[in-house]
Image 1: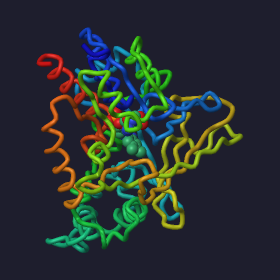
Image 2 (image 1 turned 180 degrees about the vertical axis):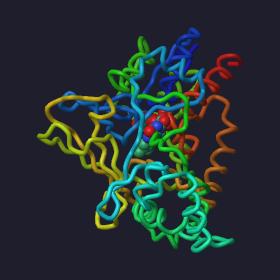
Image 3 (image 1 turned 60 degrees about the horizontal axis):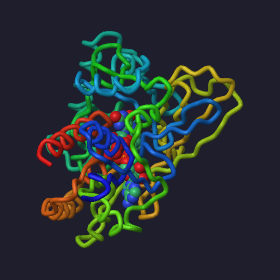
Image 4 (image 1 turned 45 degrees about the vertical axis):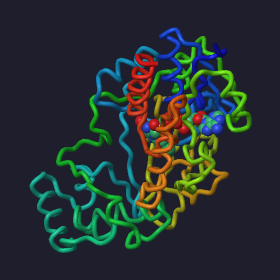
Length: 369
Ligand code: FAD
């Protein structure tokens, strides 16, 4: 018998939930991470007493009571509700698109007036057969919303003109005819009291962790000490890129400590205007209603991805999806490796979806394995 039942590569939310469930079922786990900390992308760094979301702002939200109850075993949540604004042409607008936004754009005071305005704009600027993202957005919401609140942000995000982006990127653009600035529609929402690291610390209680350790630097050794591998890193890297490299969009974060108590009065403000290179500024203390003397803000700049950079958003276009499917098929032929999480499945997942996926995969594994 080998020393460990499971060697888990990656201490993000997927690896940590899997390790927790396996340990609860009496299995012995070792979890590795190449970073110097656990938690993957939900990790927060404490700066000036403020939990700074190091890999981008994270808001926990779900409609699924089982997932909500699951995370609440490990941490309690505050009553934070994400309600970002957008700075556009020198003015602030509420997001997501709702009655407040329409009032700020046009002065419309009733849902009937706002609906009328949007329908009129769609008629005037939309097309029946949108050929690119710009035409798609114009057909969904018309010119004013598109130009004021979508165009610049989207072009910065993808590093391409909206007329050169495929229409499929935007499938729907929800508009809401109530004065409701809550970005998410889910029933449960909040930020962990004490920060996201607490979830991971509690999931990994009594589990052996090795940080600063890259699985690929010692693959054979690690394979020999465990019966099975749970792999949450990049699937193309696992197979030595034999079908080609999967592509991503990346982000650069510029974080500053400011000697002021309250910089922007909100956790998130998007920057639609093209003269700013960042897409948003996050003021971390507002996630936890902080009243520290100083504040920490992060400007977020979208970037092209190269292999030394963090892979943030998979580019699920046809080319990449086809490459991924080759890897997926190959992965299914290995019966001692379980692939899971956002990098191994080449898929954008929210945190609640990652937890659900790790619970399903670990249950299946622990029942059969
Ligand atoms: P990760 O957290 O990436 O964990 C993978 C881990 O594996 C990493 O720690 C990595 O270092 C390690 N690893 C990889 N390869 C190796 C190797 N070879 N050897 C050792 N270790 C390795 N979700 C929400 O629900 N709400 C939000 O508001 C939200 N905001 C987001 C904002 C941004 C900018 C991004 C990018 C994501 C956001 N998410 C949000 C999604 C959330 O981050 C993910 O759902 C979650 O973190 C994925 O967990 P994971 O375990 O799959 O991956």
